[in-house]
Length: 366
Image 1 (cartoon, one colour):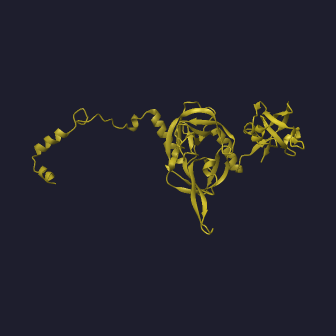
Image 2: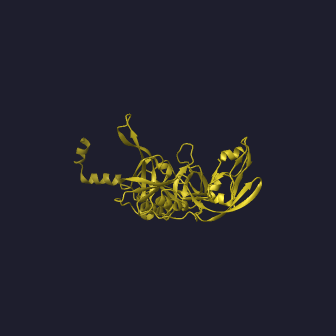
Image 3: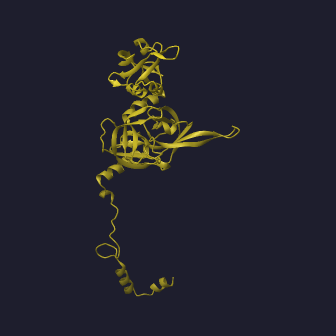
């Protein structure tokens, strides 16, 4: 304080000289320091940076934080309370207040809440899910007005190296943006239902726990996939993430909204497990028994027949659908995945070493 008081008694001319001596040199660099680069102004941003910022600003409000809740009861069963069972991401699908997320985000839970970027939190109900594609749909109450739905792109014309953006809530950090490229296309991934999800998008955009169910976007802000999993020994991003392609999502979600499930088609057969077929050295799908009155029975497929010693003496093995080879149940499931009820197919069957072809009409199955 004494030094400050003494300055007040210095002549103005001396103070002016001291001020000039401490000022920056004419070249703009502070005396005795390295050159400092000022952060770029918005006008100085690169075109790619401006695109990233625009996509995030235009889409992030439609990305939500999903919390799955379970009911916990006390020892005597009198008291009930909701506890958090898991978290993930999702996004606004349409104008009817539907939210798309992953099945594994909502699996086993009884109630759900959805948190928006502005901090609003609303209850949601589960209206449908498909474990075979790891997709689920939540619905908000009629009184809720969510942000506009995200635009749906196409995964048919994607190319490796294309820029992508992922928005989600990793580790509970809401509305986090990561960017990268499409690393590979046509990948396959095991679903929680035990079947393979085809044509999965591989990306190096960081996807961590909590990103599940969030959108993978192209540079126009259109959804091209739903982020679903990562490959990592630690459970954290290691540069390999996967997204269910939007063309699959657009096929599944409308059915979940309308029916609560995916309506699939088949030929009406019960089959033996792949494990049993492998134990007998069989490649294909073994028909256990055609469903009475179904397409397979009408076409002439026969049930598995065993003798008194439980040895096989008659067996039909499905080895192909049209021009698609069938090695196991997964192959058979995928051969019918994008077919419609009423379509006709040719089923290739190995019967006692002789291949026969049966013409059948697909029907909806439970």
